[in-house]
Image 1 (tube, rainbow, N blue to C red):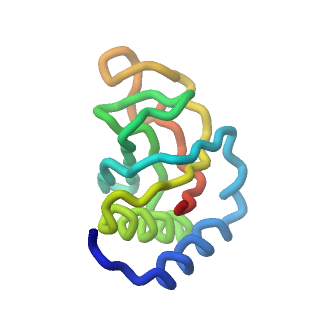
Image 2: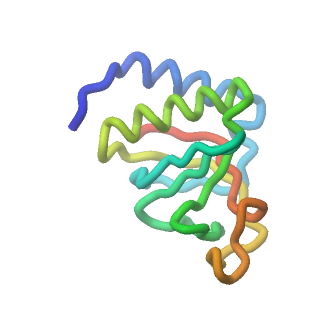
Amino acid sequence: MASINKPLIIAALIMAFSSSNAFAASKYVTNLTLARVKVQEGVTLVGTTTQPANTCSNEGEYFKFDHTTPSGKDLLSLLLAAKASDGVVLSVWYTVSPAPGTTETTGCDISTISVLNGVGIN
């Protein structure tokens, strides 16, 4: 397991939750392990080892967020630190997908992936 700066993670967590919509999520799930973080043009896609309820799956990614905003940058920093730590258990706040249970072949795409609103490290 890689060593990380715990005060840095705590600071990033506080910044992630300081956004006004961090707790505006419709769902909360705990005990998730981060599987992947995919950064692309203005959006970050996130996959976990298990699929949370009320999400759709686009190639194993269940959440998205805009990493171009200040709170999105904080969230991206936190997720990258968690990924580097390997095996960190997360709690996640997210909005329900309009196409829950679908996959990339049955209707899940960038427009229907659940929006990630906040992350906590357990």
